[in-house]
Length: 453
Image (cartoon, rainbow, N blue to C red; front, side):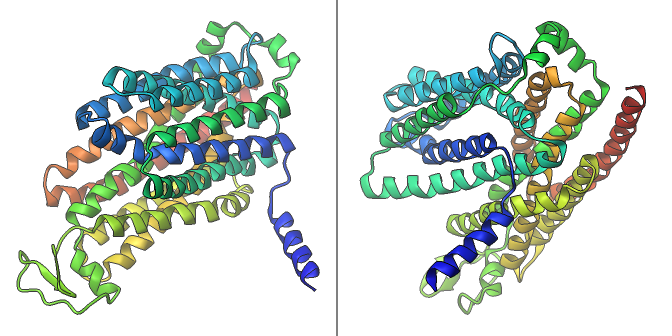
């Protein structure tokens, strides 16, 4: 009986999984494994170098920022090398895994600021190499009908791996206190990923595409003169900036400007007695401030967002695969707009705050799972096969742009006071109208290109 039930469950699971080339699955599982390693260091590395090594918060910020700058160079070289007949997708991925493993070795032995900087530069460079090559490889291994789900699978592996890694890393720290072991674990996952690529994945870029490819600089010139790519960089940078606001600005907004008393009322944690808006509230004998969500509650909300993102990524991407990519990106933009309105309501609400915050982060999860695979699949649509690596390199720079502008703009807005902080989310929601207009122009450009072709 149990065998029959187990067989039935497995059959249902198999039917729900996308039917893709086995090499796409290997890439996804390798990415999941390496992201588990990244999760070990993602949250805890800054804490370790500030509290244990003794670097200042400014020094830690500079070190992490140096990794982002190196990532820009890595994306440029990764996309160029992925399209090169001398290198190719596979070689770039091998170099990415090897350099990232070396970066973890440096960080595990770092006792001062220069070594911390070196480790972050190597890590940023290695991760920068990874993205254009892996997305070009996924495009090589899939048909147009499969790409939405294939890119969704890789992103699903990212979300699940990072979430699991954060939990396991926290448990390791709690049990042992060995922060340096986190970098060792991360380095081992990169070495395993290196082995998977080396033994299980052959070069996917065809020799015909290599032979027909123009020189590197001609390829970059063609890509940068493509009006569709130019406009899409603007659109994609703003959509990425929306993601950055949700990940970097929103936690700080929740901790400063959201009514914690409204949260407690909405979930009936305790009976509250508030003397006035500026006094603390007694809950089971413990005093808490009437504004600002606790770190634990913010963590719970964002865990909900990550779990929902992982659960929805594949089914939503499959459902959206029937529609045009630009139309799907428009739906994602609308979902972001709704979520920003939800943030505003959460900020001004005095009751039901926890419910509003949960619904807002659920909508952000939906916007994310719609956006990520569609953006990558659209790049495949407009990129010549011989220049996919370069096009993906340009596209991945949108992440650097969005994650630079987003936290900077959001942090500055929050520093202007509560009224401006609330209005900021409404302004972001209104900006969606601009994105929808740009997507309409992008659609016309894509149609003109098809007619010319």
